[in-house]
View 1 (cartoon, rainbow, N blue to C red):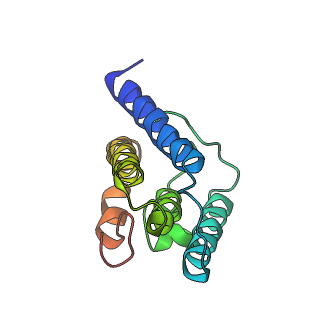
View 2: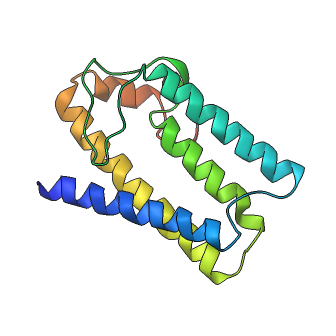
Amino acid sequence: MTKLNLLTTLATLIGVACVVCLFFLGSLFGRDPVTIGLQIVAAVLMLWARWAFRGRSFHFMASPTGGGLVTAGPYRYIRHPIYAAVTLFVWAGVLYGLWLLPLLLRVIGTGAMLVRVYSEEHLLRAEYPEYEEYAKRTKRIIPFVF
């Protein structure tokens, strides 16, 4: 296992652990129309991104899948719509449990997600020469911002 694979596996485990902890603390799901609406948007974005990915599998470690660079669907607007969806879903519930532990879990989980994002981008640049041009015209997580 390479150093990058180890790092992304660890980041995945940390991110999943943070979400599980938020669930058991009762601080994951929204309880009002705004947060529930945001979480529905996140779920739809996740499904749209998976559909655009056309059946390619999820990898526990950051690694490009075969079949070429995906730039259709939500990938037209952001490079990492699945991570964007997970982040939106998790942070939408921040109003419930804004005390230290849930807030810290969200920050740590987001940091773990960013480790995966940057690791995947490193691998995608190596695998797909056209990724550099794609990265120049699309944002990472938040359309038109980041």
